[in-house]
Structure formats: C-alpha cells, structure tokens
Length: 193
Image (cartoon, rainbow, N blue to C red; front, side, top):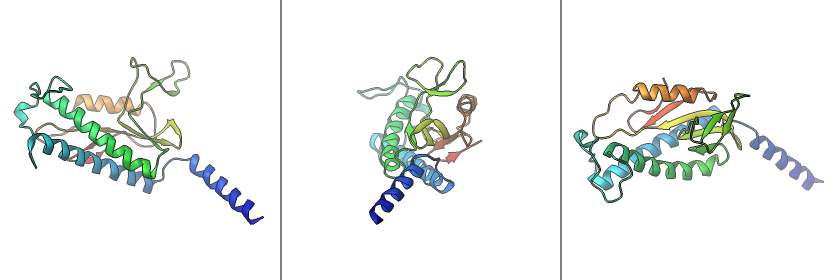
C-alpha cells in the first residue's frame, strides 16, 4: 500500500514538473547562467585569438579576418559566430543540468498564416530564430522569455540597442511570451528596453 502511494506521489510530481513555466527564482538562475556564459565566451575567444585580456582594435572590426577558417566576411561577424558557438555550448551544458525541458537554443519560429499561432518551422522565409528561448516544459511554442546574445567587436562598448536590434526585439515580441525579449551582452548582462 505504501509503495503504491509513493508511486502515485512520484507520478503526480512528474506531471506537475512537466506542465509549467519556470518561476521567477528559476528564471533568475537562467539569466545568471546566460550572463556568465556570454561573459566567459567573450573572454575565452578574445584571449585565444588576441592574447590574455586583449581584444581586436575597433579599427579592424569591419576588415576581413586574417584566419584560415573564416566564418564571415568581417572580423565583427566572424568573432560573433565564434563567441555564439562557445556561449551556446556553455548554456546548453549548464541549463541542461537544471532545466532540461524548459529551454531551446536557436529555435526557428513562424506564425501560422490562418490561426496566427506560433509554430516551430524549418523554413527560413518568414521565420524568426532567437538565440535562447525559455518556455513551458516540453513545449517550445509556449514561450516564456526570449533572449538574444550580442557580442561587441573591439574595445568600444557602445549602446547595443541600435535601430536593427530594436526592430529585431519587436519582431521577437510578436511571438508572445511572459516577458519582453532581452539582449544578453558581456558588458551589460540581461538588458530589456
């Protein structure tokens, strides 16, 4: 009899765990992980390419990278891709330990033309692909919060909220969610405007 009661309690606990959003404290843990991973990725890539505590000079950011395996036509974009990859690996590893069913890295979304429901898609045209989404347990289309990682190039730390970024965040807001989409940068952490 006691064994059946324990099994029933475990099933109920499993059901409760499977059907919910993260609470505010858990969301805070996620945001701390995002900040830490973005800062670590920024430092790690810069240190590896330019030396400890050094970065690319601002004047080089729009020039072609002088590396064998170019990921993009400019240093700014090349470094962004490298830093995103390192940050994503860190985020995947750390969030999978705590919230394996409540986050997705680079999901691609679109709205259904008729119902306007948010759907996952593999179509590029007309879709959006935020960097990190926390969502209802095991349901990536029930969005809780959207985060986009931004890495500056060079030493200059300007305002990351340029016109393109504001437009991007507005488009992410159109996907819904419980909080405003946020940028995550090495300098400013999680930033919502």
